[in-house]
Length: 471
Image 1 (cartoon, rainbow, N blue to C red):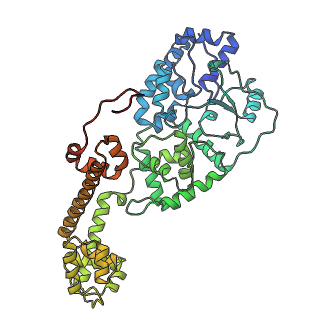
Image 2: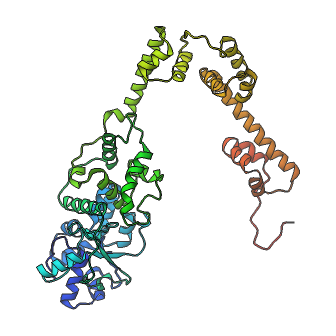
Image 3: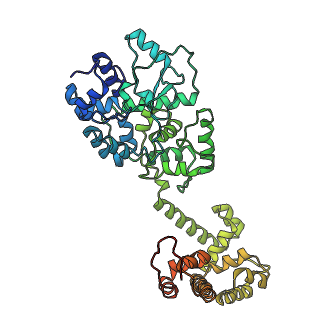
């Protein structure tokens, strides 16, 4: 069997459609002869059975997979599933290939479409005499032609045999111009497909590239924290002119999970989300591939900890020299509260005359805190703010540990009493009823005092068929 010669950037499914139109063979007969089953249904851009098609056409299977399907996009953005997906596409297991592509997990298991550009159809008819399906047009989420910068048209694939679809029609309607951001995304996706035809060197984790670029643009702090609000505002401002794509766009301006997933190491995201974010961040696919990684050293945890230790050392040195808090603040940029706590932790005497929190009051607060008095009650007794009480308590690690233990025992005592009283008032109550009516106490004891809870709960009852009442 010989397939028709492939046109530039032609989709493999479209090439098979042209073969059936030229040969007159039915789609069921072709699928039975090539794929071994007349009921085989070929996916439009993740076509399975590449090895069988390549063997009968006397062509290289790897070249068909790389140059005539969208599999390279999924290999690139889902490296943890790339080997399994490639094996399934070559072997012909379409169902497993779809699962390994993660499309069902991305809510991408709905209706399938084939897209075409009306100006490309006119150009193809004029230049080569036949219209064909372009691979770059089929990228999920893209809505414009990267060559002519007009909106794509689409047709839904309703039948099981997608090979019966035919060629893209010549639509007489006037082409509609696409927005600038639509064209940027389409251009980015087409460039990336072209770049992925060639063997690529190890490009590192995409999350590292994103974080490095965001750090340069000022969306990541020197400590490695993402400035989520300004980042989402800037990113979503360009999406206002893009046709809405269900499940592929952020749900709202504060959908921070959308960005967090893209910036997480090893997280699986729909390739179009990467294309959308990459087009906004890098503008060019070649720039993204050549962008240096890993992220700048100042964002690492080790560098952050070193900087914190240096700040503490500098602050302590200045305080020991007898400088005022205002002077140390001007030199280090650290707040007065931070400097006060630093001095209290390391026992540095400050040249201050506190109006309220003097040495006598501090000892009184420590004594009340040691007795387990609540911080709000201490604040009322000593006529001082709750924040000052909390700051003073936090300077004594042993006291903090003791109060945590007191809080734990108090919570356990209250939860036990609640369950015991409920059992006294409802001696015939079942386990599920105790869990329903004392849910907070029940689950706290389940996680923190499981052995006691099991001893106090009634014995588990055997399940009864429906309709039988408890006697």
